Image 1 (cartoon, one colour):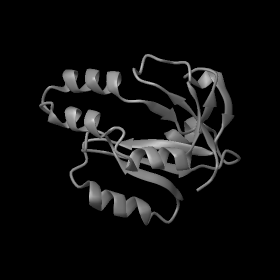
Image 2 (cartoon, rainbow, N blue to C red; image 1 turned 180 degrees about the horizontal axis):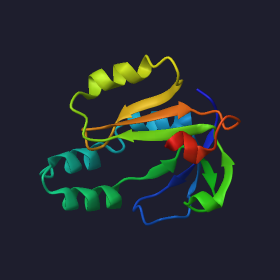
Image 3 (spheres, rainbow, N blue to C red; image 1 turned 135 degrees about the vertical axis):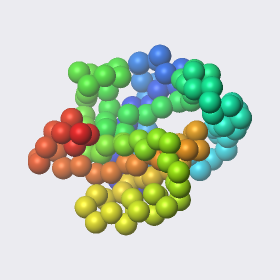
Amino acid sequence: MDNKLFSFYKAPIQNTEPLGEVTLETCYEYIISDTAQPATEALRAIDPSDKESRRKFKATNFDSVTFSGTFTRRGADNLIAHSGLIGLDFDHVLDCVALKEQLLKDPYFQTQLVFTSVSGAGLRWVIKIDLTKADHATWFK
């Protein structure tokens, strides 16, 4: 894994000032650890049809990172250094295992990290992007 740096934000999501910087390896270690397991299980226990309660719980109980780089505060205008990566969300996925396999085999994009979202019904895919070919916003589109 690359030693790219990302800004790390403690919950709740309203915190826009980063607590510090982390690497992709640190993110991976966090994901496979039991650290977020109690909050993840509590979120998944909320009725899926109660979207507002799930949204509020997620916004209040989970830390976050900005895979695209380091920031003085969350927001595109506050970028310190771009990581050359982008994190893409796939929500409401019917078969996360199949999609994960498909993304890992993608011939064009180099997967840096792919994991199941805290809801259990989506994936987060972190890939390399070439900023000499297009800017971040273009890659996102």
